[in-house]
Length: 153
Image 1 (cartoon, rainbow, N blue to C red):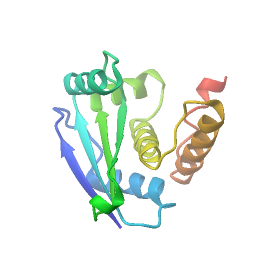
Image 2: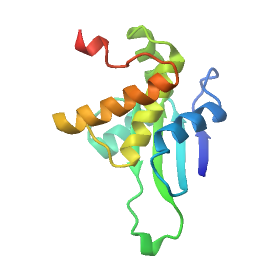
Image 3: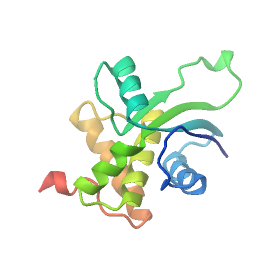
C-alpha cells in the first residue's frame, strides 16, 4: 500500500491528478514489498531553484528532486520512503522542447524520482543503464515511448 501526501504549491492549473500520480508511483514502487509512504510536492520555479541551490548547489530550477528518507529503521516505525519535489514549469517546458506529451514526461519524471527513492542512481554508466532500462520498461507498460530515444540518435 502507498500512502501519498500530495502538496500543490504551484500556481499552475493543468496538473496531473492525485490518482495519476499515485498510479505512476505504484508502478515504480511495485518491486518494493513493504508499504510505502512518500510526499510529492509540486512547485513553481522560485521554490524549485531555491531547493536545488540549497541541496545540490546548482542555481537553477530542475525538473525533479528526490529526497530519500534517511532515518534508521529502529527510530521510525513507518515505511517512509522520502519526498519528491517536481518543478511544474520546468516539466512543462521540457515536454514542449523535447516534443513529448505532457503526460509521458510527467510519468517519466515521477517514475524516475521514485526509483531514486528506492536507491537507483545514474552517476556511473552501469547504474544509468540499469535505471534507464527499468524506466523504459515501466513507461512502455503505460504505453509511453522510450524517453531516451532522442538522446541516442
